[in-house]
Length: 245
Image 1 (spheres, one colour):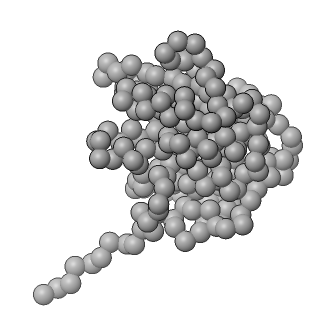
Image 2 (cartoon, rainbow, N blue to C red; image 1 turned 180 degrees about the vertical axis):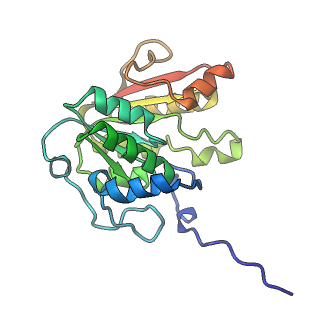
């Protein structure tokens, strides 16, 4: 009997905490491959990985002032996808530094291509698990805002433990944010929105930066495919904003 080939070992599945991503495959076109090789060094941070795929190696740290060559507010987007949100923000706010955290290589490549075409100098990318970057790589109190827009809602009840927004993530975000720093959340899944609000209302060191049940839609967020899909299906888009105190 012919032995069936084994699937490649993926150490990213062996973690004891939720991660900021779901491993996805996606091929790059030849032109994207070339652009990735030619331009990624201008944008992609060289972060050594630990034993798990996309983990941050012990002792790896980065100073935003050195990374960007200047002192400026830093905004980190967790799960930047193909970069539509962060590219728009970086172009509109050249005085601010932006860091996109994503492990989907094809999405990173598309972000690099568009960033190079736009001549952006205030954008960097990290191909690592976001909680590890926020907890271990970036200095404490170095981030002005953290954005988590439309994370995987893990709809089934048995999978809720995999949701990114948790008490532990709130702790990590609190460490990374500077005093008065802001955590912005958005989702089109009501159950997850309720979960986010419950977690963050109880999180030590945070206060609501909105009145009523939900925050107003963040005006700096462009209409991405994820949000538009939710709208088309008749789902309410829920925003939440919390400030570090």
